[in-house]
Image (tube, rainbow, N blue to C red; front, top):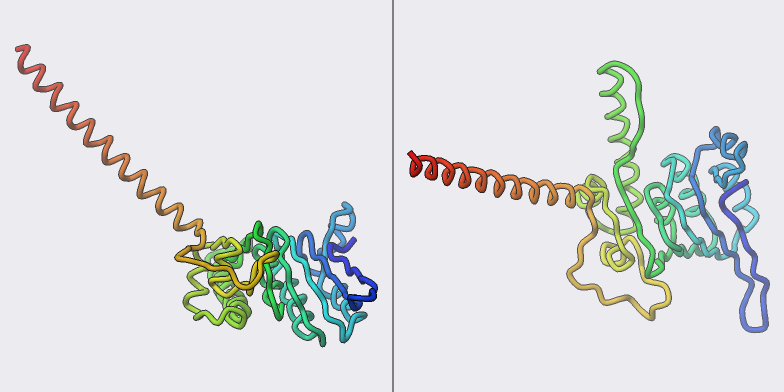
Length: 242
């Protein structure tokens, strides 16, 4: 059962025929689809997606995305298929486009987000088993994969590679306003024109953790000073009693 669904809206007297594509669920590689199908879970794979997309050649498509992400390789296949499509692609992010799903979103000629939606980008993740040589090799592979992901983000946003790399390092969460400001989205749904975005920053889990650590360190310093003061007062009190 695929987690994408093509919907053809028939032409009316005032509106031409339109095609909507809804992407919802985990994005997985072709050889993993059987497991999801076995449990009746929604899933998409690049090969099946490409085959169905080919039925809408020449048509403009609105792609709705609501996904936590999944395999970056599967996302790359879907991204390429959308970029190669000979019609205009308008991406609309329903509530979330996280991880690999954000890569798919970059294929849009125009990317619009719900005012309630979020986008998240981060470094590629994997699991590994082996000795130190295996882990060093895996780290090199992850660097290469990250570099390829940065290509898609840079192409859409126009931001520098170092900027995008840092955002991925930080695991950056963006509201619709921030995504527009940073170039990951072109506009916000249900609003006329581009929103006015002031000095806003993306949510970085790493920044929050570092801030929390600093706050905890400050608290511990305060407690230590307080304990030292209490000890001094105790000693003075004992001297007075002698």
